[in-house]
Length: 388
Image 1: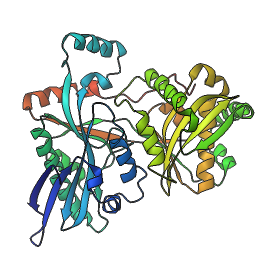
Image 2: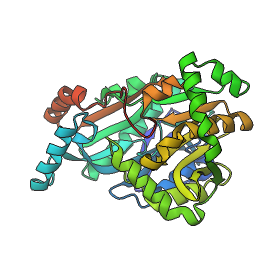
Image 3: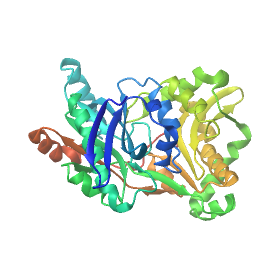
């Protein structure tokens, strides 16, 4: 049974029922996926996320039904959110953490957010038979239903995460009508695989990048690459590499568990895999990927920096993924959020995303609007990372 249900008129001829669920398994898989056609991070991925036991997160699913048919849907989550999470200044973040050691709730707010902490973008899905003219009203009702649920659960801060721009069909107006303020989110890096082969890919890069990439790829002969659909005997080492990579990250939101990676690999047969990079018998890097019929999504590249960097493993993984797209006939390689300068140099374009937020207290909302430019994550420039 749903946690909440709200009945509201859709048209004169029918009524919609909006519901909030805490268990995705209670929702029909085919009906959910019908609202998100071609989405790699669909029902099976979200179910793996829910069952991963990610600390600090409660997952929700908001749907609108007309009769027995889901017509609009969106994942959501609740957590305690630290406002310092997106601060660019490491000193300020460390200062907040020290103050939190004295005052445990300092800048920590109960957050209810439409979207998922583990997807690349967040957007509502609509049944394909729903006309564009009706979608803004449906989305507004979905947002209102989630707000009611969130406020009852004690979450005063409401948000929508990583909404791709531009928003179609008046959806932005539906968000604004409910009092949300907008701030820039991190863009998503996408390489359009519209070239016939690897030579065609190299031809679109600058002469300097082509030369540098060909030089880096000479390390390929000393690296063994293995593609798997499970961890096999490498589970502990793979998680060690994830921990190392996470600790190097400036922004840490969710802390993923072994069950997340295992669930992604086993719960999406034919649509998920991990590529392992060995030098000798030592595993030095892992690359977790999921795919749809058109898109390859690079979820996580994790590496032993000191040992892996001399072998240019990030660049080897990039080319391996481009070759996979060519072989499988995929036309989109999505490499996620971070390390933009390098990804643009390798031919990616950046798709803009927005965040929206609203606090139930008007005074706090005004303060958050004022602080939004300082809390937004600036698009990084020349980061030094495992890609160097």
